[in-house]
Length: 277
Image (cartoon, rainbow, N blue to C red; front, side):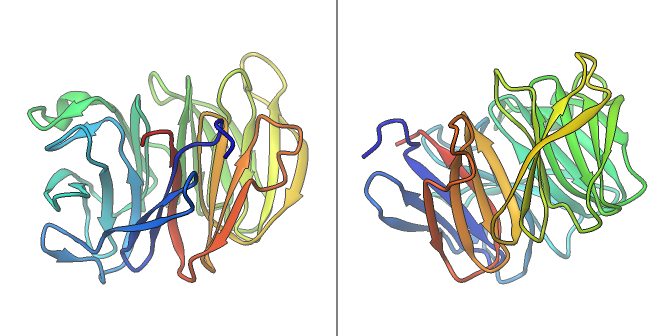
């Protein structure tokens, strides 16, 4: 087994199942059938793993999620099923991002909220909110935070690059005329953005200046139709609308060849990796 590989791949499907896949053992574990007595047969609108959120136990996986019929963002403990409200929105949450530093959520009206990610059970989430801004006139389809920028993808095929400190726009990219589910900022030392289109094209963009007001495409390759993607420490996990999941190492020269690829047979709404045991 390659010791540089992350230990675990976490995958959530549209019908509410969350699975952890051991990349070292090749084993699958089904973690989630329901949260807080709410069967997730009600379609998930968005979900993400939340490494900075601790509800009952720091060893448990925490998730942020929203159901398709609700304007509320919820957080839950996967092991115990405990759930509490994280916040209510003026419109339905449409996409959510979380890492060890920030939580970002976009809604169907085009608004974005950003919080600090280190929130415990005893803290008020409003006290940890950094800003709440109307970023787009169209629904937000994907959001990502990388160092000092937030990348926001909307239903009008545009991608905006936003200052993480104050929510001010830095640049805008117009992508191909097909819905772009994800725009990811690559981890340091890279300054690149990567756009993943629904039909399966992956395009790398490089900033033309330190101000990051202009971006130029560097390379492109094609894979399967994409519904979600995330990056952790140089690894990108991609989920597909048909159930395929792939893991890429974007720090290597062969960044267009997957390290791991398998099919779960259900629409994937979240895929991410962790080095935790």
